[in-house]
Length: 225
Length: 222
Image (cartoon, rainbow over all chains, first blue to last red; front, side):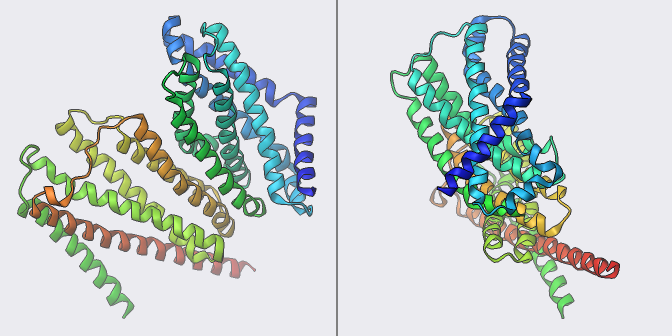
């Protein structure tokens, strides 16, 4: 019970400070929408082409915006030695890590939803053919991004490495996730009569479970380091 | 005595490497279709195999560090990652040189090529991260989970990219290849293994010496 309460407390604290400052979410949402515009300038205004590229662009936008959010996820703690004090509390370190992970997951999910809606308007996407599949892919994909993202954000916070290092370390790790998400999203948007999305969704599931367990195993060690 | 062993192993490894390369270049027959270009295989394939050995060492020593908390394993992981990166870079560039006359392109988005490139990114990232942490103990504690996670990702990357596309030729089995070629390949693989061990040993030795010097300086300051 203590575990869940600690997890909820961390989430509550992060969400409350976000609600009061409105720093992270506002800037990443704006950033995401800006990139959607930039893509259409780079590729050209042809709706057919933009529609075809939409699944890939959607996940790229989410990745880029997620990095911005993840970069800040431990910033408040890094200042004034708050992180050290947080660790000194006699609560499970996994709960601290999971609390952070959950907040990041919520941020990424919100950005993802808004970006999808904006893309449907700007790129003239049709209503998704397999909405439930799309929801599942979003949940699994965002969980993967949040898991590895929180892990690397913590790693970076612990060193004097800043800013540049996070995407440098995180993006290569997320390549399988990106591939799986893009193809599965494409099938979910355009209809999937032959169930081709299934292996990709299974891969996402495997990816998430492997890294979630590996991150939880080593999270305590990282926090103490 | 230690000196003799060090220089002796160096001479043996390099001598054997030169011998294996000479054997591959002059004794084994050129390929029926690819001609002499095929001889790049004697560097390309052993480098690829041995880079995997190096990465496995990074993985195992990362786990052992997490369990034992001895700096020995961190030094070993760092040295192996460095040597692995060199070998992977060699694999990629030689494969590219071989691909140009054979496939007609320098680079193609094939499963194995792409996986190898991603592997290089991952381990260069690992090394870049290490360079950012000054404190040795802290660096060891932070990079051990990283070494673990990266290795776990390798099979996932491979399968995802494989589903994405495929062109690289499947491995030939020894039964379909000229025995001379098989012999050359195996000779070179062993030669590369010697070189790998030697490189890792020297990097390892170097980081141990560095640690010693740092400890001495710290001692003098105190």
